[in-house]
Length: 208
Image: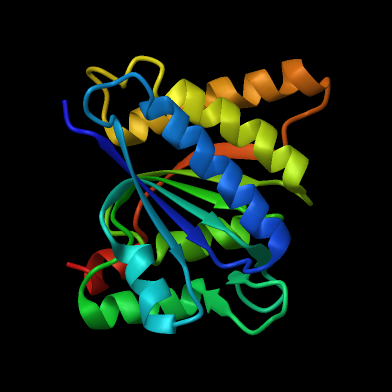
């Protein structure tokens, strides 16, 4: 069975984001321990170059994990702590249409504040090449919330390597298990939400 490909995209670009992403990388690398061949391939991108970042968004993978500040005061946007780097989903959708390719993944983990709102869901749908499992947040999160959820999510995602399930179905199941685990571990409601998103009518026409 082929290894799953997980793309880690750090747009936050400060020490705290670096520490959080290092934790995620370590979790995934530990999953590979004891196997003759890796069961997860990790692609990691931390860059300010717009072309590099946009290419990372549209590269085929099983899970696209984006770690950044989330903002939708004007339009849903991933941004760095210093404000020098930002990627709006409107911009991403326009670029995808020009190139004829959108986000092509089984799941998107939008690891930032308030990325699960209706505005984000609508904007993501304009960037999709196909149906995805989308994991966003309902409010403010910090490194602790992200770390607890991500360790549970990736642990669940690789517990049986998802035999007989699509990448999106595996991610849906893993996210639901991680949400339950988060609540059990912290005695608090999990800020992460999971849903299925399909390409918007505009995306289906633009990315056909």
